[in-house]
Figure 1 (spheres, rainbow, N blue to C red):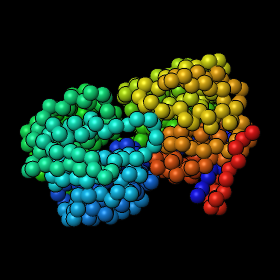
Figure 2 (figure 1 turned 180 degrees about the vertical axis):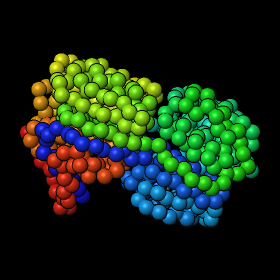
Figure 3 (figure 1 turned 90 degrees about the vertical axis):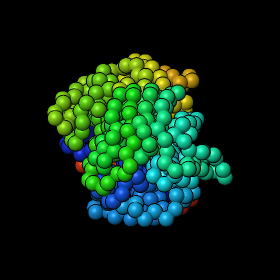
Figure 4 (figure 1 turned 90 degrees about the horizontal axis):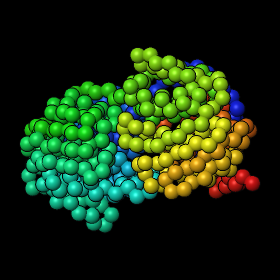
Length: 429
């Protein structure tokens, strides 16, 4: 067990380089199951979710070779089973992409119902609806989603009842090798959906319209191997931008696609950040006081739900009252209790958080309850007076590559400390 110990109150200065996108990587890696031959995937983030997904592919029989810590080669020509290890698959939300890839190529998939962060009710009914429309039989037995088809899947028109990133990507995976042209309507538009389409097309697929609400997948008979580089992580970049905004200072955030960050940049500017855009970098400064604002999370290109906790930390130190409305997930405010231990004044009413800014936060022992909540607590610790100890960092390391190393390089006083088994961090009084 480990924890982060943070001595707060220091401004951040320097340069930070953003890693590959987590949400793209955890879909592109399963997509390699669709390919005949070897895929070389570069800019792969070195995070727990990626490591786990690669382990699942190895267990299925794929040849997985790490070229270096951010480059992997995958050859799925000798898959020996289409049943994913139950314990591994249930540890990661993105394991459901295995279903689309396996049923799309091999006509069979058995994958445990997915786990991941607890953000309220997160059904996969839109995924299974799409698989059934494409001709698969889908059932849930003994904790597994079991999907089977007789022969090649057949193209269909798939209208998603809600804008779902996961269902959009899973339908693309299942339809790539299907017979005919599949049309996905009410599709999500996130950058990692475009990245998955670009990966598939680079291997010989025919996917058009990614990034709009109508995607067309013209089925092909096979995909061949090739090389692909994953896009930079929009949320990792936004998290470090939020950290600079919260603490003050000046940091050049490198290896980004500024257009993907427009929705985040606009809100941080409202909160008092000064942001200058370059071709593949953003200079983030904050020297004046923090400003209140209102935020509502929405599907892309709206303000991302994965940035809501980080933004709320900033608003907890801004003068005046701000309103934060969660428009995507039902249960994304569990971290608020931890922020209150640090002196934040936040009241939650359903999907809305009423944030009354305080002059400063103070360090306290806190626990991460999910990936982005954990990142928010780190930001709070960086900005707070005194020492903050963040437990349950395994959540954070699911999605942030070398977080401590990157923050230390820009002046943060943060270290990773091993905890003796059974250690209990006392609650703040």
